[in-house]
Length: 286
Image (tube, rainbow, N blue to C red):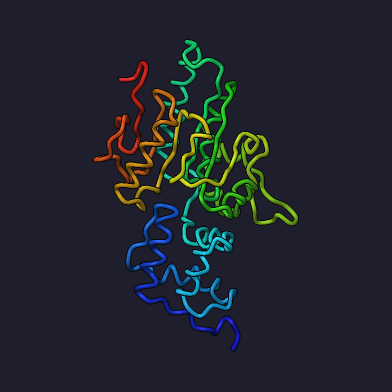
């Protein structure tokens, strides 16, 4: 029987709960009942490649310190989320029309010194969010130092983001003037692809990182994008993550979540300025 005709390995309710708990402990994400098909669809090939008969056997592999690489691969497969350029465009409009001009005014008044403007895409996935922000900053802070940092728990998507190569269909979401300035159409072996301009990639850094860990080594930021992340977290995890991330903002810095998310009920020093957009109180900020 060819592999394509093999039936997927069945997963029991107990095994699904165990995998959900495994993922929750390592990433803060808990898979809700009903996601069994997703788990099987993403992990069945791993069981076959390893010659395992059940998900119980696979969990034993994941729990073994000797198989750290397999654990990373399982997390990669279970945490990949959809993203695209300029998703929820009002956030990028706010970045370009409000936040960037504020930074220029603060710079002119010598309130921020010579430090660069820094933006963190905290769940950058395959990089579209980080590069969208970089395009906006290139337009609005052309003579000011700035940098974008993108992080994701998946090492596989981080590697893809660094390459800055995307299907040509991804261009549909990019405003035409920005597409022409910051993207290049692939030719020859890159036919059907587009590449983010090298000058933009040079100011955008991608790293593997887990939001459940202390990431203060990344420094402080003027903006943190934490979009489409907290919907996967329980309340206690949300409180923990927000508490640490707010300490990584400069006073007056912004934390932006997705339009379907809110910080209501989460204690913090962040105040809402618009739905999904929050600002850290501090010097000169009410």
